[in-house]
Image (cartoon, rainbow over all chains, first blue to last red; front, side, top):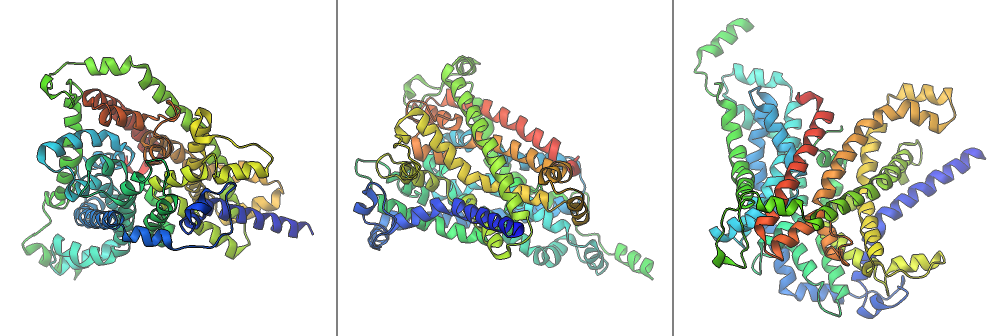
Length: 272
Length: 305
């Protein structure tokens, strides 16, 4: 009897965890299927006739679809660049000892901690001077500041786990380091590279502060547009929640794919 | 035989094994970070010594020495904003650690395979949710008239709270949303710690004592401590960074009830356009962050040293 009550508590506890973690998400998705009248009803309704009206409206709205395309362009390009620049650096960090290596580590890890507002101010001024304000390029470049460290960190970890024998064998065959990197490390490190790319994508897709400050009309990203609905008297709640759902859904799926690596990604590998 | 092979390899031109080889691999990443990270930081440092208000370009941007820093350090709003950020940290951290540990213990306990995997997977959802969208959902949940938070309160027999228009209500609301988003982070870190306890030691301890508390204190705690350190340091850096969710939910208000440091600096820079002062504030924030990350590395990356 005692065992089964313990089991019951365990099951209840776990159910509570699931409800706790999913509730805001559930509430957003359910509001996205409500009419404005249902959303504004007090107290809130839990059961209602779902409508697709909100989704029809946001997909017809070129502002929202344009913003999602902007987010896609920025997140994809910056992620690609982060991998192209980061993977070779990870190779050097995994395979060589050199002076200043720990300083380099320190620098990469510090980038995880720095508040975006520190860079947003000068980059805003520099973007005005160079005419880069409100372009995809400025966002792609600034996003590299947090993507590169994450790529370098995760990929270095992966590269370190590749047995050195393989490299020895290739050396004996006369392969130079660039060939070894291309033919051994890139293919064998592919899983780590993929995980780091997904993290990069999630972080840049979710970013708001830089996008808010560095874009005007042309390249507003999805979070900026979702936020911009938040003004005026009667807020279009259904549209806002539908936009929120469209923004969050793809990154949630990505996150589920890399869920086993989530902790390593967020702590820069300090806890294994 | 292997010696012969090695010397044969040595006779070939030694392409790509020179002293400078690491440089070729590192240069692209390092140069990029120099250009987009260090150069703007230096630019901010220079700006912090100037009077730099872009709404008044006629005055030019003269160097004023440490004037901005003196202004910032004597600005009571700056200090109260830092104090508020500290208060926020002190409010969220214990809740996240205790709840996170409870969740980790639930997930570590044997049995309930399917439900446990489900719970383990759903933990990732809050962590991946776009911070700005968390703020949007927060505005809906904590609405005075049609928010579900007040409905829950009424189930428990409490009257409605005007969450977002009162000082305490708004602070509580951002604390709750942050707890929702980051408790899973603590839970996953603690879970990783718990799974490091060698199975036979845990089994033996379970036979010795039936007290879960004793097990936690004497067997599991040592494995949880590195994770706890990581949580404490990373969360402090994250709270100093926190902008998106709070900006969307409250814009720092009402009054200055949720005016955390990143929000305050953003306002000085991009609403008042006093970029000299804002840069000085940002540099001070940067120094604080560097101290925090030094600490993080000192305590958690033994292999690097």
